[in-house]
Amino acid sequence: MTEAAKVPVKPSQKFVSSQALRPFQALRREVDRLFEDFGGEFWRSPFRRSPAVDIGEKDNAYEVTADVPGFEEKSIEVQVVDGSLSIKGERKSEKEEKKKDYYISEREFGSFERSFPLPEGVDTDKIEASLKNGVLTVTLPKTAEAQKPAKKIEVKPTT
Image (cartoon, rainbow, N blue to C red; front, side, top):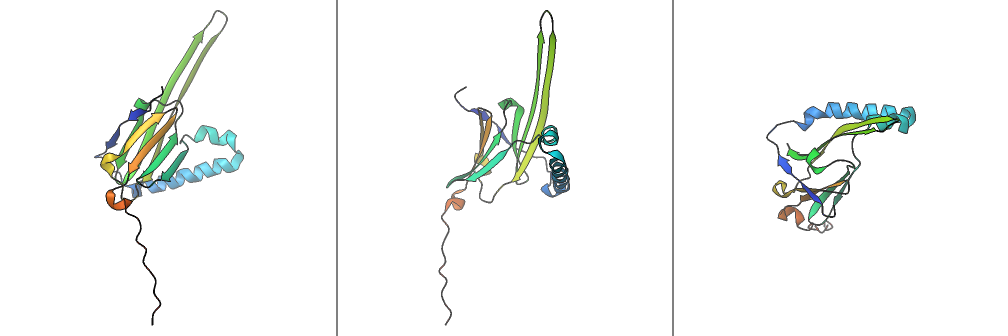
C-alpha cells in the first residue's frame, strides 16, 4: 500500500468529563511505574498497550503521530470528545497452521486508548487522520486566528 488510508474522525455526542478520567489515569501511571521499577522489559511489555506518540506543531497545524503496527484503519477510531482528541484501537488476529507432523495455533489481540487535550485554536471540523505503514497521523489544523504571529510588546522604562 503506497497511499495512506483515511481514518474517519468522528465528533462524539457522548459526554465524558476529562476530570472524571484523571483518577484512573493517575492510577494507571502509578501501576506502569511500579512494573517499570520492578524489572524493565519483562514486566512492561505485557502491561503496556499504549502506542508511542509524538506531538508536534507546525505553522498551520498540530500533528499527532502514533506507532500502531499491525492495526488496520477499520480497527482504529479517532474522536473529538469534550475538548480532547481520543484515539482507540483494537487488534485481533489468529494464525493456524496444520502440517502432517505438527499443529500451531497463535492468537494475538490487544487494544489501546489514548486521549489528549486539544490545544486552543484547533479547527475541529477539519481534523484529518491517515494510516500508512503502521503509523497513524492525525492533523489538527489551526484556525486562522491561531495562525497569526505573536505580537511583540515593547517594554518601556518608567519615568
